[in-house]
Length: 77
Image (tube, rainbow, N blue to C red; front, side):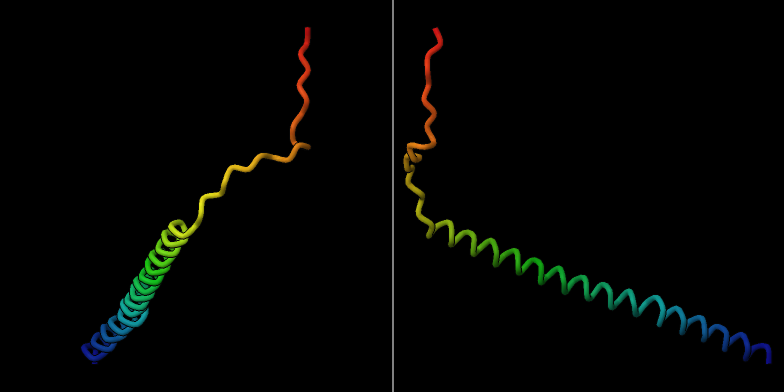
């Protein structure tokens, strides 16, 4: 009888260990790996888009600011 109780108790501990520790850790690591892969793919896509847009972008020409932006300078004697 005592042996049966010990075996049931050990089975219960094994069950708790597997379903409350091992399986959640496995699921969490799988989700983290999946999210990291998605993040890296998004970073590569963004970098590629930036690279192509920088190559296609024309450099703005230096235009003179409007006359209103200039302040007259007076010499102090």
